[in-house]
Amino acid sequence: MGDTKILLPEREIPKKWYNIMADMPNLPKPPLNPATKKPVGPEDLTPIFPMGLIEQEVSTERWIDIPEEVLQIYTLWRPTPLHRAKRLEEALGTPAKIYYKYEGVSPAGSHKPNTSVPQAYYNKIAGIKRIATETGAGQWGSAMALAGSLFGMEITVYMVKVSYNQKPYRRIAMETWGAKVYASPSEFTQAGKKILEQDPDNPGSLGIAISEAVEDAATHSDTNYALGSVLNHVLLHQTIIGLEAKKQFELVGDYPDVIFGCCGGGSNLAGVSFPFIQDKINGKELKVVAVEPASCPTLTKGEFRYDFGDTAGLTPLIMMYTLGHDFVPPGIHAGGLRYHGDAPLICQLYHDGIIEAKAYHQTAVFEAAVLFARSEGIIPAPESAHAVKAAIDEAIQCKEEGKKKTIFFNLSGHGYLDLQAYADYLEGKLEDYEYPEEKIKEALAKLPVIDI
Image (tube, rainbow, N blue to C red; front, top):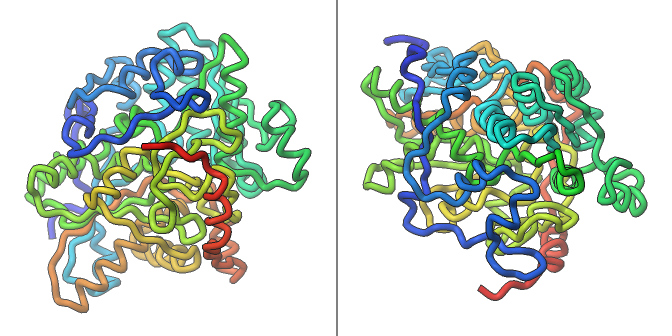
């Protein structure tokens, strides 16, 4: 049967990140200045980002060096293990082989520190004292709070209100690492105040929290903004996941036939799949699937067009699949997937047919998560459980068709700070919600019309 865990020594940590823009057949259309509708330049980004990250955002170099200071911190948890899910295979009775990369071994419990650490580093060397950011489920906020503590920086986190209330232990973790955490929408920004005036009971959304964090950064000279997904440099940093995985598959003489990753903004899916998609672009047979919630079906039901990355319209216009920037999804437990858009790189790959997408309801996702927990022992984060569900479905299909495939997914984080979600599932309290087509059309009707 071979090893259950395929491990790499620390000396095998990749020394460079992989930039898929060097190999994509079509690059995404450029982000646009919301005032001029002209492509964004470095001067538009310097008020909230350090130049080191701006350079990575626009680079088409295939390989980007990882700074030594970042590599040293990565060794706290990297390389992460690649698991062969033998007990899950047995439970399903499938001829397929199932592997998962386990990013929950990081101090913050998810893949997010792979980018929070370099973002904190580039801001630190640029002389920035404080970082303002947002968080949905709390995983990104936790990762940024961790990175801030490691580099001695102040961190302010605007946490989507529904998650702030659902996940108090995430907030406590952030505060333990020294961050200040506010429920969003808040009274601390003009964007937050305006939304609360219109709707005092607004549950919040990632779009709203981004508006607050961007406003905070733009109005304080010692403060920059950091984003946990969507942007090119964020996806770049996450490719360390897939780069390690390729080395681990080589050790056991295997290679995936299909890769699944949950997808909210795109950092997790990109991290696990981009180094493999490089092979697919060069002719390798491979299926890559983005898995999203049916209540926030960005790729499967959104439109491919320019939209704001936030609710207040403070960010550049981004060419992406979107449900509309003022879309407020229901308060599902997979808070990290409750985003109206997706990373431009992910969207372009989907538009070009290089990757696929599917959506699931949350009760089916939690059913899969419980099966995984009872066979493999790890309780997955609600976000990660979407990939678990897709992998299980693929394995069952292999059983029905008698096919021996190699299935690979990223277990992007553990769910030990999300146990209320499991309590709700086990008590039969979870409800499925499919976002109505008319609501999506209503939100899309408000988007700016851009000639492209």
